[in-house]
Length: 109
Image (cartoon, one colour):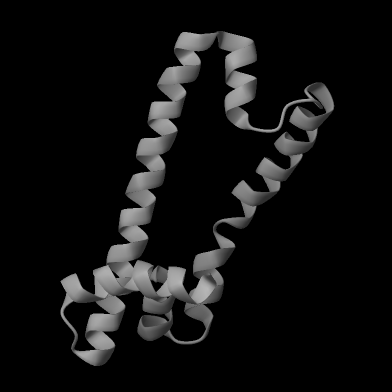
């Protein structure tokens, strides 16, 4: 949604320059992912690596952090989508936030 906002503010080049700021992180993560896969080829998730390296207590703490981060990101995306639908249609943000997961899951399944 921020890239759309930049497009509205500065024109067509706004989303391009907004997204180009993430290219460095994406490239560095790709290099890191290759190294991790070489060193721990039997691991599938980041949490498995944490458990093998740091133990069960740290594994449980990281799972709590990961779940919290996922819930926050999901809430942010849901609220942003509800605000967009509310601005476009005049629908209440609460109803839009309720209907987005309901309709997307219904269409998906």
